[in-house]
Image (tube, rainbow, N blue to C red):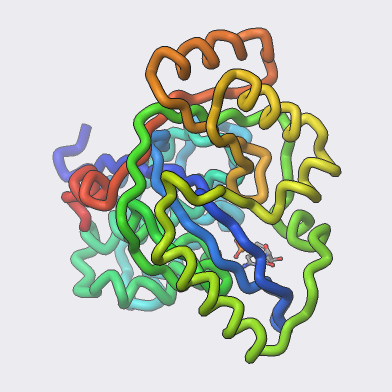
Length: 299
Ligand code: C5P
């Protein structure tokens, strides 16, 4: 291994809460969400090289400009006039698509990793516009931990840590497209003023919420469950196995479940062995300080 290589974990997220406020005129939706980093992660290895090369352990993923990793590297090169390259190797574990932000996390880690490799003198705030141009969820991964996401999701505001050790994330073999999931909501078009007021209310509620007692909600559940009954079956199986709560992450199809103890989680994990087409992961939440520690080489 090249001594100059950077090896970075690229953590997944779940959405503890996701409220779609309304449709905007630019084709996006305003939303109010709570992002939470979890321990499930991909691994990125970044090595100095003359040109830009991406390789991936999973040959089903594109390694050209369709991959957000490449777009992130090109975006950074363009913004800061970088002429050097890098070899980036991606080992995937986070199911994609799955509502776990895998591709967005990879893109954010490439921004942080290449900022270091190319010795770019830019703050996290300066990386934010590039992150935002790559995707609505990308900016969150520059911060990690527990955070509110507003607007398209790109306005990120860190909030108190939500600590849960015994989670399961279950991803059925169903590809839910984010764009279609938003369309299926048939959300009302709101004026800027209405949107702003609703966002402010939601933000106020979430900033003061205690997630131990507040009911989780994801506005995608009804329409995603209607279109993909298998995803609803994942949620009801997890509830039957004692999860409190179990909820869709992002636009799915992954469902996360919170358990009280390691024993109940393990029993649920084992009971789900019969579902051969469901991928399942025993994970914990990652706090902002744990996130920073894991990424200390680049943050
Ligand atoms: O931002 P990102 O590229 O991840 O979004 C993918 C698609 O999801 C967008 O093209 C849009 O159709 C939809 N979307 C949305 N509102 C958001 C985020 C995404 O309508 N807040």
